[in-house]
Every structure is written in C-alpha cells, then in structure tokens.
Length: 375
Image (cartoon, rainbow, N blue to C red; front, side, top):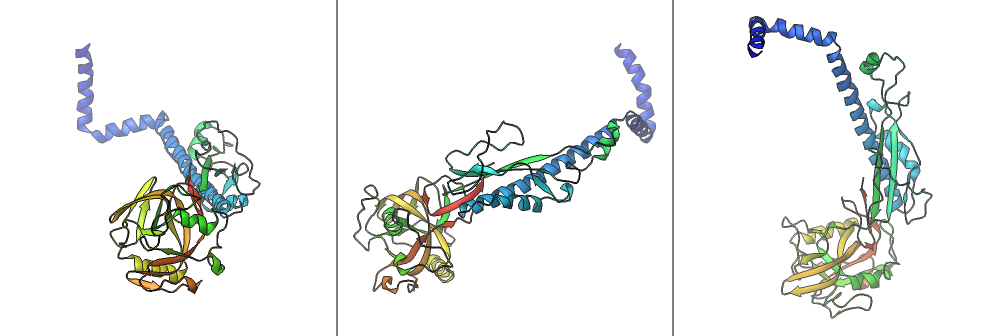
C-alpha cells in the first residue's frame, strides 16, 4: 500500500514542481466551487463584524453606567442619562445608535427610583452579581439599535442562507459601575489624625460645602505639625489615634510631587520632614481652592524620623492657609487660625467630593467618593 501511495504521489509532485501557479489556481477553483472559501469569507466578515459591534456596544454601556453612577455619587441618581451616553459612544457600525433594553437598575443608599436588579443568570451578556463590600452600584444593558433593530445585515451570510430577509443578530452588552469611599488612593503627602476629623465633621455628619461655595469661618481648622501640640487622644477613637500634633508628613514621591500612594492597612511617614516639592504644591492648591485628598490615621507609631500609620479612610480637604518649612500663606477663611512665630500648621476645612483618579470602592466613608466600573 505504501508503494502504491508513493507511486500516485510522485506524478502529482512533478506536476506541482513544473507549475505551482496552475496547481494553486486549480485548488482555489475547487474550494470556491465547493463553497469553502465563500463560507470562510462569510464567517470572517460576519463574525468579525459581530465582535466589533459587541465591543462598541460595550463602550456605550460602560459610559452610560459611569455617567449614572457619577450622578448617584453626586447625590441624585439620573438614569435618564444612560441612553444618550450609550448612543454617543456607539459608532457607524451600530448606526451610531445603541438602545437601552431594560430599565437601569441597581442598589443605592441615596434617594432614587432605581429598581433593584434581578439575579444574573450567568449568561455572557449578563452583568455580574452585586459587588462585594460596596453598598452602591448600577447595571446598564444596551443592544444594537440599527434601523432593523439588529446587527447590520451580513451580506455573505444572507447569500449563503438563501434568505434575503435575514437581518442579522441583535447584539447585547452590559456594564456595572459602583461608587463609594475609596479603598486606596493617591493622596497629598500629609496625614491628619482621626481625632481631628471626628471633631471637625461631628463624626461625619457636618461637612463644609465644596468649592466654589465659601463656607462659614467656623468650618476652618488649624492642624499643627507633629510635635507642636500636646494632643494625646480623644474619646471617639481608640488609644493611639492622636499624638503630639494633628498632622504628619507622609513618605512621598521622590520626584517632589508631594504625593503618596496609600493602600490599607498601613502607610509610612516621616514626621518633621516634608517632600521638597510640598511648598509649591500646597501653594497651588491654596490659590486654586483645589479639593485635595488626604489619608486619615486611626493609630500611629512614631519612632524617631519614621512613622507607621493605620489607615481609617480618605478625606476631602480644602487648604485655606499654611506655614511650613519653605513657604507660608495667610488663612483666607479665618485669619484667627494663622500660625504665629515658629509654629508649623496647615489650615483648611473638610468637605465631600468625588475622587478624580482611578480607584476601587470599598473603604470607610470620610467624605471622599470614587466611581469605578466593576463589571
């Protein structure tokens, strides 16, 4: 048998060797005649188009979910934002449209009319189950919204099916966005004790309005550098939540940006030694009335020039004045809080604000909120 196969193969190989082009042409003709290449073309074009459509619909669902979640984080859920964001992030492949196929749903602690989401079935286009450890989230489902209500008609597939009325496959997508206090964050390079935050906000029940509003002078706080006051604790926090001074410098970016990436449960500090870039950064935030985000510690352990702090959460803070090595500015809100002589302090007020950078919700609410896609 082996000799027979070899005997038949040799003449074919000689023919291919004489004219490869003719052999390839013959093979292609056979494949086209049998519908193989046409079928492959249909699969490549139609399935590729379907995946592109799905990706663009997902972009629309993501944008819609983030927009609704941000409105909820700002205090008033607006599910009516979803259709506009879904369509605006579609493309020509979807007819520049995407349709919201069911009411925007979710769970939120703010007053809203959001219906509660049903339990996901595990399908490919389902949103995931409710995120763990997060109290607030929204789900947005969208689908193709071409004139036919489906994917643009697949020409190859229609021809192969012999069905001129075939309009294609409707494509779906879902996105989930959550909001809440950040679990970790990039912050300004100083930290304030939980005792100070407790007293200034009445345990989180009394915040100053954020800029551009100008709060009453009574909201203004003067926080002293570590070692320049005798604070040793408070009744609202465990022992060690405060020390001799209300704020410390944290270990920060060596490039002089006066920032620190803080992740729980602890972070480090360098009491008495500021990042060289901090005076310029604090002055810019002071002049622009920028909301900055700072870590709040619940316990501290300072040994010489190094401190270790246990994170309670992240607070939103507006700097109204400061006096630190390398620079000082008078208090804009309450001049009575100006530092005097050799005192080192940072003045400001606590407010509520949305954290601008990427982050993951799941921390303790101290006034800062982050919005993120979770599915």
